[in-house]
Amino acid sequence: MAASAPAPWASDPLRSRGRRLAEPAQPAGTAYQSDRERIVHCSAFRRLVYKTQVFINHEGDLFRTRLTHSLEVAQIARSAARALALDEDLSEAIALAHDLGHTPFGHAGQDALHECMRAHDGFEHNLQSLRVVDELEQRLPRFDGLNLSFETREGILKHCSRANAERLERAEPGGVAHRFLAGGQPSLEAQLVNLADEMAYNVHDMDDGVRSGLIDEAQLADLALYRRHRDAALADCPGLAGRRLLFDALQRLQAAQLADLVAATGAALARAAPADAEAVRRHPVPLVAFSAALRAQIDEVKRFLFAALYRHPQVMHNTDLARQVVRELFDAYCADPAQMPPEHAQRKRRERAVADYIAGMTDRFALREHQRLTGRSLFAAG
Image (cartoon, rainbow, N blue to C red; front, side, top):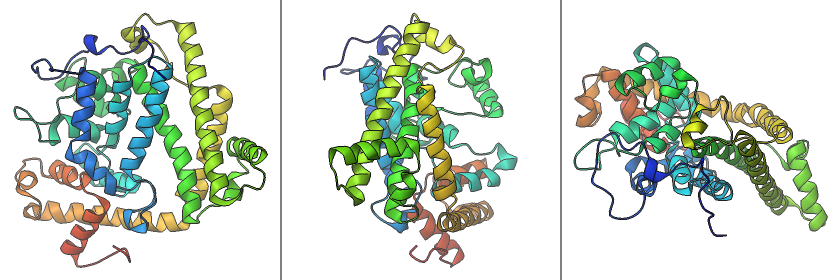
């Protein structure tokens, strides 16, 4: 399907707020296309292949990782952006970058690192993703970071505590954190990626949960959202069972989520009729949304996954071990910074340097470093 002309409320790369540091005009492509290319080629993006989504890297090769998750989010976001006549390149760039700051071991690693950094401004993975693209990547010749456009950076910063927003605002008045203080919204493309992220992880966590054996397909059939599409799959292919039934039902479910998102958002935009992307930012509430009926069903899925999968005893056991790995790495590097590479060891803010170093690790590298520094292997297959 060919892309339609951009909607008036779509982000326009020709009207971008620009990059933090001025660069010569690009010889080809838009600013958002350039952002996407810089993200795909950066080292933090490559490391996502060995970072946990739910299951720690050593638990199996077929489970989702942060990289495959980011690719799935990008595919969903791009499809929705095309249907809504938004900027596809910006949507994809935000999606590909949104998890660059995630620690090893998923949310367990993030929570442990935040506890370690509580006396040093804490740790937020969204803020860390922004630090990666603004400071930590070292690929461009004249400055640190990737020097991305404002709109991509705005979309990366999905959440931000007030304290961190105030710090960012002091360094960049009216910048990417301003909306958290003033009560505004990000671009429609950023709003779209937020929900594409939710769509992706709900579906793939159901899939990975069944693959792991921690939940089964019959449990999913108790959920209204899944059951409707499972019944449709069986009506079309009587006798369908096993993984083929699961795949077909989840594919239908994902397509239905996308169709609902496009329809509900289209209706919201028709009612609000924002004049341009800046009017979207001034709107009191997000305009990208699911219908109320689908939102209720999605929330039911999220509650189920939290109770049955994320709090499963096996997952919780590995989560506790992962937190211990991160805490002990943090303590070891703070006690002896020379154990880190020189570019981290020589920084003045020791704790932040340690947090940056640990956050950039893959699961398997963190496990190797932990064993090297402590002489212990906490995971049987580590």
